[in-house]
Each structure stands twice: as structure tokens, then as C-alpha cells.
Length: 153
Image (tube, rainbow, N blue to C red; front, top):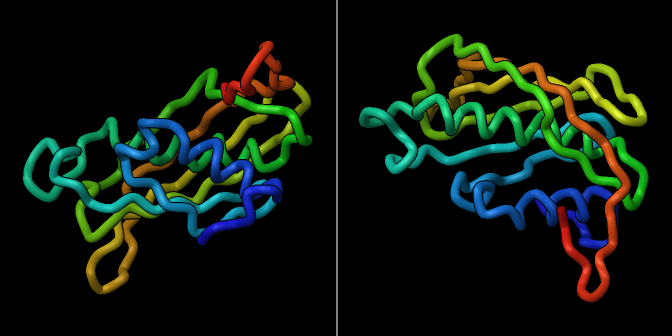
């Protein structure tokens, strides 16, 4: 799923997918709506702590991106956000074809937005197993323009 790079959803996707860690995780947007973002991440042996089971850091990264991107989907043009606090609870092994994260806004504020994500391990059959849940706080700020080329923060 890709949106035009001139739409708010397209700008959000471009901002997230420009980050090297998002590229390393292989993130793919499957839904962007105000206050909601769904992401998928393929199973990659390089991110596993044992064959076929993702390490917790990769699971946390996916959940964090989904939650904070959902928070970012509610920001006005010219604003950006970043994680200031997050807690993840791992509920089941992250095994399967891919992981799917569903991020959502819990409470949107001007400076801080509370957001959450549920992460599901997706089997080859398509069956989903909830494997993690995350609650986070995102700090919202106006993007600063440095002299010269625009810098994405």
C-alpha cells in the first residue's frame, strides 16, 4: 500500500520508511488512517534469537513504529513526533510468516500523544496470534527547518 507522497498519509509513510532501522526491519504499511496505522514485517532469520523466532527487540521496534506512526497520523502539517516512553509486554513467541502490528491513538494532545499497538504473529495459513502489546507516549513538535536542504527529524 502506498499513498501519494504529497498526501499526509504519503508523507508519513515516506518519513518512516526513510529511517534505516525501518528499512532493516523490512516494514511495510498496509493501512494509514487518522489515528490508525497497520504495519507488517517479514520474518527474517537475521532478526531471530533462534531459528524461526524473532528476538524481542525486533518485535518492540515494529510495535513502536506502528503506535508512534498512528500518533503521527493525527498531527498537523509541518509537525513530527518521536517516542519518549514505551512499554511492551511479550505474550507469545513471535513465530510465523510475518508479524502484523495494528497501531492506534489512545489520547491525542498537542504536545504528547498516548498511543498503543498490538502485534500478531501471522502463520502461513493467515491465522493470527497476539504476541505483544505496547503502550507508548509520543512527543509532538513543529518540524524545524535548518538553513539549506530540508532535514527530516
